[in-house]
Length: 415
Image (cartoon, rainbow, N blue to C red; front, side, top):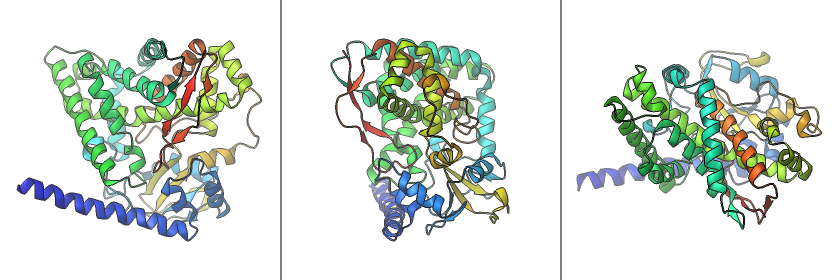
């Protein structure tokens, strides 16, 4: 009884906090604050709000209290400066946002993420990339087998593929794969919740899913330490990593990679189907898949907002910011501002743009390579198996997803 009362009181307090933050976004959005309108997460295409931020100068001060930039030089300076971190110097997140669940490993500082990357180094590298590609090719073909008459690209392919690749690579047992996929689906809003409050039910479900994933991975790590497991998680432990550290590294990889890869695959397919000549070029030569992914990362990055806190007084490109300042980079707007043209003429002419990938010092310290490689393989498999892929209805994006722009539905079919 006492536990039930404690849980109810905690839910009430969390619900009030979520409503306060959400209410601030709506209030300031109603008064014209473009960053607040972005954080509402109600627009499929927030570019009009992003351009209003750009019109406010290299650094726009939102009424929420956050500094926001759509300027490519300022954005690059902020993201590349080690004096900025995900947390302030005292290890806290900005007051206007929630502290994520400890189980999610999404509330750590830069040093912690870099340490987890070192923990995972024995299983990363070229060998991992080859294994990811092989798994994605095999699993991708299985997922598409018999799907031609009509299916949801998001739910049936783009979300399941990275989830299954990660499960196989980490060593999650076959009999736990269905549970694994369900937990990842429930954890989907976690990256968005760093800046945009979700509903109380979704918040509790995502936190519970993170706990479930951590428990499941912990059992995999223990099985390997007893000599009964395999996979990358087991190899981390065999290489000398403490099981808790190996699990934390795996959580960092999984929660930053799964939904991000889903979004990247869907964005890339949408862009290609909107340019039939490009889609035909990819089908004629699936080796162009990396170029298609580079183009998508450059113009429609799967992570739209990057959040940083200044640890000391700084002046990125000459714009002074006091210590403790919270800065958000509008990644897609900054990349648009850095590209003077409307884009390359065809897939064979896509440049390898510097900085087009995911920042590799915080949440994506382990997952950037996985996201890109898996998306490339997914596009290659689609081009080979489903060259006559077409839309079969309206694409629907999820609300309250300003960070990823997550997809809810992407109906397609192929002959």
